[in-house]
Length: 241
Image (cartoon, rainbow, N blue to C red):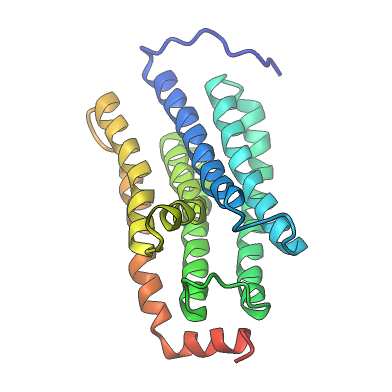
């Protein structure tokens, strides 16, 4: 594979759009580094965490790295390599969904829930976030032949993944964490995409409406589910109560 980026004609809408998603993938990665790096610098998190915490972190970091790589390949017009790596991405996405569903109860069992959350709220928050990621990423994979839908839905799916990093930044800045404010911050990324569409195409692609709707629903769904007696009982059972 050619590792050099050819001279790009940014007056071409397709090239300009590919560059936009490459830049946004780097912005997403920077947000993750900033959020988790700040926690590490403050001594709130450490490498002495259990092995499964590191497995979770490495899996989700691998997704961010893959997202940057895929956007780089698209920008370089290395589409055959992009498609082959996409098969790895599909497997990784499935692994992340299973891992998230399993490790959230494990976190409750070993009493590693952040003190700002009740067990029921933490369970609802994580499972809703995982569900939103799954809906968006597998929709993007299903529509992979429709590039315009695929790249926007995959972008929105990756925005879901960075919710924990955004929450950490909010906690540091405001000494509190609100799922509504985290959701609002995530939607800023989507709004930037919408504005880029308006500038480039004169309209917002409908994929962003679907992506924004799924991300927005994270907050009310988390609140609603955490109030359910059945989920509260389940969280209490996981936490040994």
